[in-house]
Image (cartoon, rainbow, N blue to C red; front, side, top):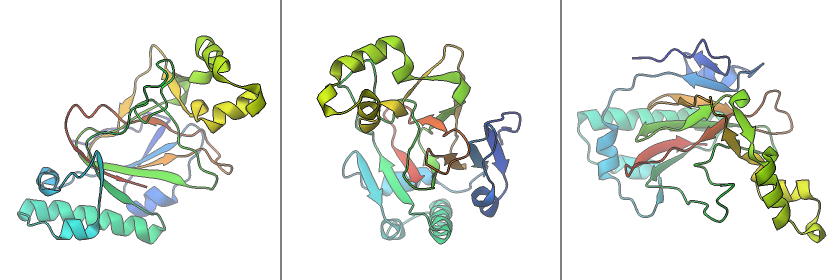
Length: 231
């Protein structure tokens, strides 16, 4: 079953990879989705890969060395083709086998890990591409449904207490420590799950960006491995 995102101003559906990379963000649209109903057994690939640490980079050679069933071969072909398309576009895709990301437990009032709703920032014009083939998928949320954490009075006061004026101004301190990239969902917020198999392009905060960056997060893995393509 395909999900209908067309009623959401934030998300625009596309029907091909060329359309995914060529469509320009505009207005409130900062997420593009190429919906695919993928054949193949991606769980078989996950079961055969070796998790060497919490985040294991899987090479194309690693995939080709797997002894797969017919359904596993279909899944591998899809992954390799996605990698090929992204490389030909000029991106640098990475296939990750994930147990979990590192958690930020230093400050209980403002987490800066990827499990917190956040935006990506880059000094150059770029976008974030991602596809979850197996396991829990990421979430995005509309910009009007979140509040920048550094604008929450009690959080801001606690951060001011950490700041040493001799190290520079407060706003630079917030940027240097990535506090300004993280957001708190409003009470009535409705995050949108990105679903398995869909290839997404999310807007990033950079000097040439014409729209607000896409707010997103990594969900709790719930003890299940994830197979994620990202760049």
